[in-house]
Image (cartoon, rainbow, N blue to C red):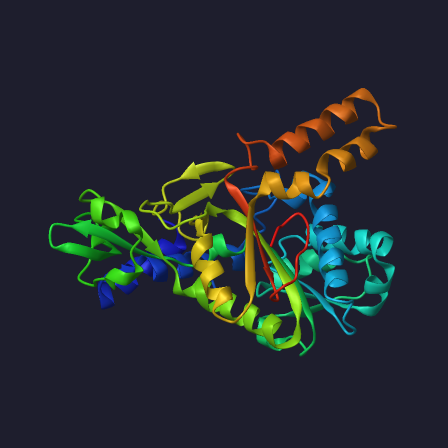
Length: 359
């Protein structure tokens, strides 16, 4: 047992089973043993690799998109360029460098912010960005100044907790984490039910044992972000893995040392995520009066000029470097890699179109 699994087992013994949402929150954010409060999970020596770590091209194209959105909104003064959930700071570093070249007026006139709660990750980000300019850190989006907001989040929403509901003989019941006869963590169907209006359309045909995931935490964060954009202008770009329409399915997963793990096996030591319901995020943003646009990650990157940028980087490179760049393109945009499962959601004021998204 990990130190956190012992703590969770004690909590269950004292108060009874906990929801999957509460279990995820403890695994990722417990102040003493939580995954993101105690570990540096990124890269080859960590547990997973994100798109900005695969290639500089990802961050460069995201930077170009932010500059295009700023121009489409008539270049508002006092803009903020913000990353929420900034990992090691690699994406922000590539964005800042790209804006220096592609949109120097924005680079010079904007302020740059990172929203991060982990002290360890803040230190890592500060080291990454040491030679890239001035940046401010915040624990919550509510701490940002009241200015036009141009915000990006990469693999952000997948790490926010989800509630799971399992179809039992007596209807949909909240899935909980309890203890089995050996005092090991185990999934059970609890007593709580779900509002039928929140279920996906295919729920009526689901077999017994099927699982549905709903995330109020994701909706709350998107509402905060979209509300600020609606009030003061700006744009949001959120890239994550998930599905375009609500569906029945268990997507809760743990990753440890770049391999899948049992979600209950190593609390606090493995990354824990669930696929993102992009339709739910988009609906929340539209409730604030904004418009939303969704593409597969491959479509977004290719539409932003991924192949052209790869050609530029490879033009004067040796054969080994060109082969590496080609592999990065395939990994970022290929349908068998990240190109299809990952989606890009743009959140914009009404009537604003930013390529490669269409109105």
